[in-house]
Image 1 (cartoon, rainbow, N blue to C red):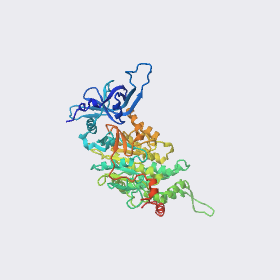
Image 2 (cartoon, helix red, strand yellow):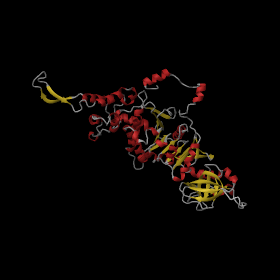
Image 3 (cartoon, rainbow, N blue to C red):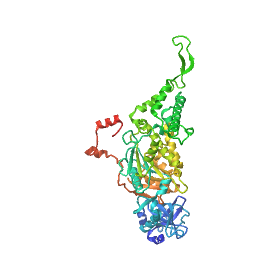
Image 4 (cartoon, rainbow, N blue to C red):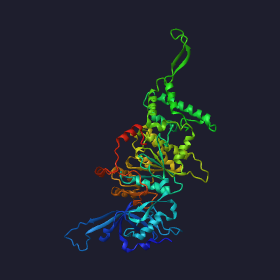
Length: 577
């Protein structure tokens, strides 16, 4: 049976009386100077509700000692020399044995407000334990994602509702060195303990490529590397990558490319997939065509002359057939040059090396490797060797394939799609809010993330967005994130971006962000009942993201690498292998 919180609230815990109430905060007068000295920012306080079984829970956000001016000529015998007060942000309501059940309940809703002159109590250890037990919902341990411990009471675990955290998207933000990678690694470790977890990490810098429990997938043209053939690209992505819209010949370039792709895809369907009608094939249908044959086709079309059906009647060419320039004659040169340049570049081998990607079942193999969870629950996609001009589109293609496959899953009436979460590290690089500076190819990548942000939860896809620059993140996507894990943030623009995601009653929490230590965070959202400062658990396997100690390494030179020969060889090979 759950205890009664009223039994924990003795007068010795009373800090003062309510003096001012509005929809965001409560001002509490603190008469006892000794009590004022014990109050700390982020302390949990308990206020009276509408009845004895309802209490309001708040967080202390400000403590003030104000001097009171007075006229020295007046009698000052009974005059207070200071007006001590504190400010409390209301965060939820606590109910003793709410309803017919025997468990106490905590709800984020504020149904009533405290009365003026009502007592306010500082939560002692017993009250804290009771509140936290109600907050964490011990009865539903299968939903619990324990990320650390509350700073206000280190004996109480900080537990998130795993369903709410992932199904309605979340973000982890913080300045460089604040502990974002540790936080991500900790979440991955805890998710990996669930037998059917399914998470895909976009790792741009190879930070997570040594996690032993994850399937390490590298996008590269090396043994064991994963390829992204050109036929994975939809037509808009091919157009954005190779066809420049500003060119006068762009119409002909688009027509030539789409004509080839349609022709080859219909031929493949006809010869290999009898269950599918070639009539439904479009340029976006994910069936194979050869990039090498595409460039051969374009080169032939670029110099093609067609027979007019007439012959020369005189001169040196008498009797020979007359020809005229073909439709694409000399109009595809720039397109061919761009395509050939990339095909000949070792960096793009993961797209143009078609040795293992010529059959349609490669898409099945690709999806099974990334989305399957039979062997590995966590998949880390290492994108560290993908060229920067292709990074956004490759991430977009992988994400689109995941979304499309989830969308076209056909669960029975009593079934649901197996859920999957995308962990988007360094998300500000490919989810930028400033579209004016984005290339067409980057906008295509952004569109699929916007779609998932708005519709993904219907199809079992969640986003966990990780960034050091929340101010630069796409606002459409961020507005759909109902949970924020914010580590230390010092930049005013980034603080404002986080504040914009919070409800009015919690905006004051942003002011504590610059003062957080490494590994400390504030979690706000519907996944956590009590938004407060949390000391995060450290992962057992740490990511390779530790900041290099410049001064110390300059002093002792320990464990540093300076091998120019190896680096230049890797540069030439475009591989660290």
